[in-house]
Structure formats: C-alpha cells, structure tokens
Length: 212
Image: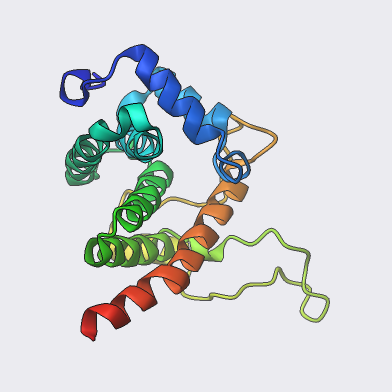
C-alpha cells in the first residue's frame, strides 16, 4: 500500500525521514502532526503523495539517504498524478493535495528545477484560490465594517461549486476536530499564505531568469 518496493525504504527509514521533516522549525506550526498521522495510519491513500514528497525533502538533507531523494520525488509525482485523475471521488482530500503541491514546488526549488517549480507553484496558487483558501481569515473583525478582514474577495465557495459542478470544492472553514491546537481552518489559512508568499518570492524571480 505504501509502495515501499518503489522507494527502497524500510519502515525504520520512514520513521527517520518523518522525524527529520517534522523537526524543521517552522513545520509544526504549519502542519499538524496529529492530523497528518491520523490520515497516515488510517487513510494513507489520501496522504501518500504528500508522504513521498516529505520523504524526498528529508532525504535530500540527510547524507545517507540523499541518493534516494530523486526517486522518492518521482514516485511522489506518480502517486499525486494518479490521485488527481481520480479526484471525482467523495473522499478526495483537497487540503493534503494542496500541501503536497506546496512541498513539491519547494523540492523543485531545492534541486534548482526553476521551470517546474514555477509551474507547480502557479498551479498550486490557482487551485488554492479555487478551493476558497484565499477566503479564510480568522483575524479580528474590521472595526470599520464589523466584518472579518479579507484581502481576496470573489464570488464565494458555494456559487463556485454550483457553477463548476466540482465535488472536490468544499467549505474550507469546516473543522475535522483532529487537532484542537491547530484547527483545520487555521492550518488551511497558513497553507494559503505559504503558497502566496512562495509565489511572490520564488516564481517571479525564476520567470525573469527564464525569459532573460
């Protein structure tokens, strides 16, 4: 089920790579360990593409695993593409697909693949907006209007779902109650800003270099 025959990893190796990735300083405040492992242990098909890109990133940084990094990345793309092709099923997890795309563009940045990094990140940004992540804002109410502050405003998630007949678009504010310390809506909000800041800091410079 975990396609370990393609990865060359053992269960112990996976523990090492997971532990390394989740020890990166900013990760625990952006990715819930409880939520991730809840899916990894009980619903792995909805998170396996993300797992492989996590392992690829960690392997890139650990000398004894570095030789496996590119193959893990290629397997992540294969699994992610297969998952996306089956995105009409009711159990599709948009959040972890977006996190996979976000970590994928960062890996492509790490290996110096500027064109694919830019394409992945741009797709990720458009998909995040389509899924309503740009509309999540739990900041204090605006004292002038009495409404939550928003930097992005468009037609709304329900009308988009009706127009596009897209079953993977869901209300981004619904909580899954898997981690009270990092509610799902807050994790989604932070993911959107990860993607947004990445697009501004990475994509534009790469595109300038590409066209030059």
